[in-house]
Length: 452
Image (cartoon, rainbow, N blue to C red; front, side):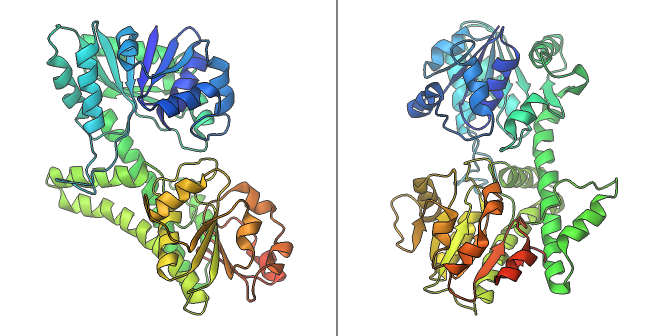
């Protein structure tokens, strides 16, 4: 069997590498028109950071895992074609700011229709709105060679930072297909690929539309829990309760559970906000404004939480940070990834720069150019935004430290040495509740957590 994946990014890269690892008899090729990205995958210096991914890729590279820019050739050769291209939120026209921009999905469908010379199974791996498969089917059906295409939905539920273990041992694999003889045969073919390492009882099959909607709903429910506990964190700060203690107390209720009840500066990443806004747009499109308003409030709370964190820094520093150095520890949206899409750090840095602070950023995996581009935009320069090479360097001369990403290395910092390099009073704002605030206060820090 030959598999081709169009799109060698955060979704396609890890997913295909694990398929190649677990099904060595299957030839897996990832294709992308971005030559530097393909070169990076082939070089062993991967374009994305994910713990354990280096080893998985190196195991299959050149054996049954390949990376190429020869899109047409690989489409033609493949039995199964995964589509894992970017599906950003629209920034223009109808649905701007909420609807998914499907131009890349449509372009892929048109390319397949144009170059394919044999029957194919097409698998939606990108996160897309309900009924996208219908669009793909119409484009493919318009090809003039009377080929047969089956379109499946196989959304990816891995989390960045834990992608490899999530893919090795998934809670479930979801495959949606048409309820026809041909559709069921295609579903079975894809299920057989995953059955090389995933128990059959974890491979769930549904119709196409249920599968497409399930991905959006799963992310919406997870984000909802984060916004819920973050809203309570503000109440905890006002009442001197401890949000971690509240989360632990309610999390031991078996009907609620402990996961995704960690208060923080807010959620980020490529999926949560995008998928919720897409869900909002779908609800509005189907005449469900009350449902749309409900889910939109999840995003509104998240935006407010990020703004509230920056405001708390300003208020604690005597209502002004103008001319003051603020160290930002961490820029990626979560630890163990270099992904900065929708990271809370962008909003926090911008708010502090607006307040005329000098913002000094350190992240162990995000390149300096990426940080500057995310905060300032392409071609813009702000002399008050500085990127440095260590957490300790960022703290030198800083009036405050803000922990924005929960990198484990921050727990090993010598804070007794750090505070000596800072003006007094020295402030620390732990946006991830990562550190022992009592010990920091013993050292002389004015230390604050979220919901504490």
